[in-house]
Image (cartoon, rainbow, N blue to C red; front, top):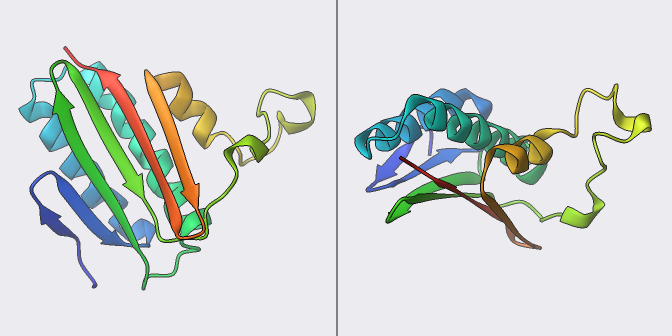
Length: 140
């Protein structure tokens, strides 16, 4: 696969940051179709970008043979987005606290923290076959 594949409310891309703009345009388009306000779209777009970055860099190790899948669903006034990779998983409890003194100047390690601060709910399902993170947020 060398280009994004869109099926309904799902986009699948090779594990490369080259496709981050495609994912962003896809997500923002669906959210606008839901009538979501721009501030909420921005929060969700930042969160999805962080998760796709992590899926590519950490999950799939930028192996373009592996895929990153982003799906969006809506139930009533809540939107849920899943980001899945084909990596080896990770232990969410081992993520360093980016606010700890020893981590304040590090250039990495803030992605999940940012996502948790912007979303209403964040669920992480990490296995040896990959990681799926589901984020949810109320939309107006």
